[in-house]
Every structure is written in structure tokens, then in C-alpha cells.
Length: 356
Image (cartoon, rainbow, N blue to C red; front, side, top):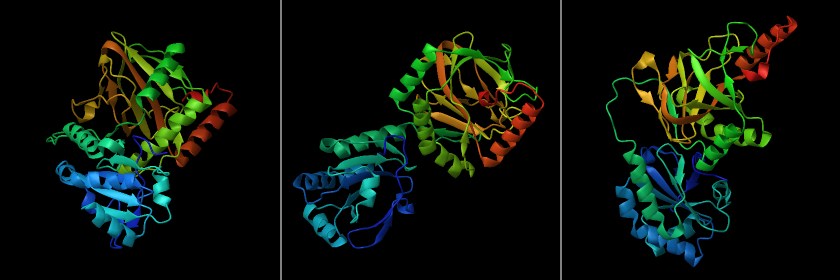
């Protein structure tokens, strides 16, 4: 089932005149899409939704929203429906119901608001579809007003990777069990770590529950992996273990470092920092090679960046900063990692392979 934060599946469907419409066509570039999913468009209640949205189409357009309605009817039937409901927007024909099914519409109507990056950001209720969509789109645009960029680290910010409920659950896991963690050493033992408070001060919980791991990995696969493929042209196939890290006020920090400089970490290609809460001060992510800009995703939002980038977590000065942390890599890096592990094991050195 598609949820907030997921990418809307691409599709090509004929409109009411039989013309094929691509959901990511240039005509929709930079615009939000209000998708009306009407599996039973002959139902008076679903036709009422069409009529209501038709009367407010101008307001939607002014807010940068294009309306698309998908029905199970033929193009000819949609043409008649469009005339009867006085809808000025396109009605798309999904006669076999494949797209309606992918978008989670059964017998009942469904509306979803999709942002300019094809990400689902809201599910407006039937009684206030356009009004809700306009409010959500206006709010989203307010947070992305155009600014002149003087310097920018090559990082990727991704909102809504985890829900508020997901974030709370992960923080509760950390509260139940956590340990102080160090940094990878130059020792070729692939899992060796040492505590160095001059460099890092953080307590972690490594997630072990298979169901929670599966849930988080599913979110990352659906909401992060496609963005990395698009933005960085890299195919992620492997994740490291998932860690929940916490930095406390007056004692939490991670000085400038790179994430792939030791034998135990050489396989890492991209790092993920996902913020779980907002009740803290300080604790910014900074990439000093690219300027003094500070990064702080909203709860549930992530920053993804190359492990070759120098970065730091500034001192937490108030509250407690919770993050979900992992690293991504591909098949070639996985094979190299396995080779290092086998070499370490053959030499009889302790190698807590799964700790990296």
C-alpha cells in the first residue's frame, strides 16, 4: 500500500480522447499532482467528487496543482463523464484496473497529493480534497522558497522516510538498551573499535529485531534507494546494520571525519543520517570542505552523502539528538568486504564482521 513518503508509481494511460498521458511528462514538471482514483466512476458519490473538484480546479491550478482523475471506464465513457461533471482536467482510463490497484484504490475512491518529485505527501479526505491539497502544497512550497546558492555540499536531503510513529518506536528501543560506541581503528580487524572521547561521544542501539529491521529496510528501499540511484547514479544493493544513535547535551558530538578510510569501513559508499526527533539544540551536520552550511533534517527526514566527504556532528547543547544511522554499498564492495573478512579470519584475528 502506498503511504506518505513513497514515490508514486509511473504510468501511461489514455485520456478521454485516447491520447496517451505519461504521469511524469514535462507538462507536469515543477507541479504537484492531485490524483483522484475513482474505481467506480458510475457511483453518484464518486461523480460528486469529480464535480466538487471541477468547481475548484482554478484554485488548484493557482497553487501549482494539476488534477488527474483515473477511472475504470473506457476513454469514450470518460469523455461523457467529463462533460457531465464539467471537469476541465483529464480523465484517464484504467480499464484493467492495474494502476488503480497499484495506487491502493479498491472499491472506494482515494485521493493523493504528489509533490514535484513524485513523492506522496498527503491523502486528502473526500469532503475537502482540493482545499486540503492546496493547503498542503502551499505549506510545502513555503519550505522550499527559491534561494541563491553560494556553496553547497553534494548531499541529498530526503523528507518523510519514516513516520512519526516509526521514529517514536526507534527512540523507545534505544531507551531500553544502548551502549557507548567508538570508532574503527587502523587495525585490519574488520570490527575493531576503540573509545576516543576527543573524537566521538555517542551511545548506540544496534537493531536486532527481525521485524523492525525488515520494516526499516523496506522504508529505505522504497524511499531512499531510488533517490540515490537518480541523484548519484549508483545502485545500492546492501545496507549495514541499522543503528540508533543518541548525542546528549553537553557531551554529544562527532568530530570531522570520513566514513570509509579504515579497512573495516572501506566498503562503504554512502552514509545515511536520519533524524528521529526535534527536541534538541545544536547537533548540526556540517561538511567543512564545502562551507559552513548546517544541515538538520526534520524528524523522519534523512541526509545521504558520499562516505568520502569530510563531515562532523556539532556539539549538542540542549536536549538529546536521536538519529538512525546506516551505510550503503553495492555488490562489488560486498565482495571486497567478504575478502577482507576471510583474510582476517584466516590469520586468527578477532573480526566482529557484523559490527561494521
